Image 1 (tube, rainbow, N blue to C red):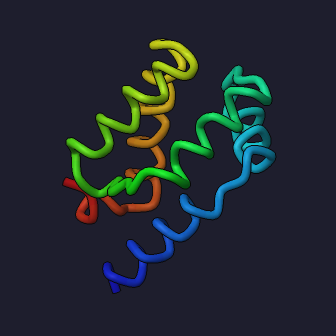
Image 2: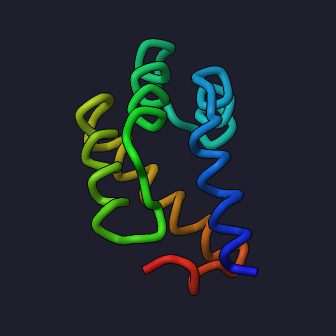
Length: 94
């Protein structure tokens, strides 16, 4: 089951559009603009991301901080952890 969930999560990340990201940002109280949303999704589409490994996630959050700012990246990291916990998926992430 965990393999299927990982595949679904990776697929969603690769298919995420800038419009999707803007909607999620609004939903979760993030302040990003259209240009930043495009840069973030372009990065995610071009670079292999393994969100299940700590080092890969940190690399992704560092890039997010570069595109936006440290405050936004920290908030995203905290939200990521909250979502993982709320769905009981802690075991999938190292």
